[in-house]
Length: 279
Image: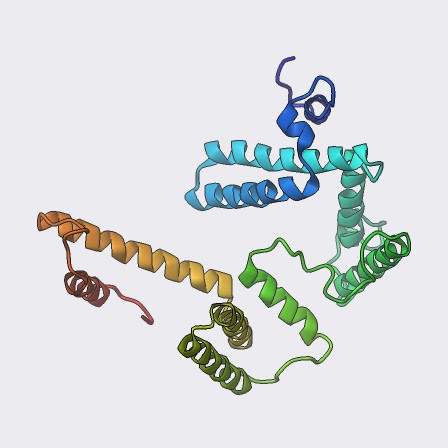
């Protein structure tokens, strides 16, 4: 077998890897649940390659992500659910349907998407999925449909919290302004403090989660993307900590030997030299 640019070969490779008799033992024993974490990891690695501007890595990472799609499709085919062709059909149908100004007849092709058309198409798709979910539930496959069903559980927690809140807000289940959210954050903070005072570890975790959820809600009302804001802070922390390492090395000191006060002083010095809108 030789490498190929044809997707059919990748599908064949996966089928052979999953063959119960002659395939790879590790691949054969995998399930949707065990593969899902790898799918998420590969998506992050694609994003990382893009952020670094590394097109060599991006080719490999996109291939790894594509393999995940083929993997899931193969397992579904084995269970008689759907196959790779169904996946391609679903996404091509969606793209054609969502872009009538590109793929429609001559009366709409080349024009801007009419106001409200996108929302109407999305609503039609949602109704179709809800009907499919109801049919599946009737056949003992999954729960009855919910407004929150199409918010993926595998999303990063901050991102999923934001999407859940946005979806619930479409029904009016939301505060209109930021001040009530700030009050909720204060309430949740006090509940965390109370659990800490009691040494209630399980309660601490639950209340801490509530506090984070409320913080995401505040970001939503302030127009701040929580994931992006936290990532910016992560980058700032890493940048300043590396500066501490470099300064200690210049002084002939090690991290292990340095005191917290010494490291704090360097941190404050680095912070003072940065032009940050907020710290």
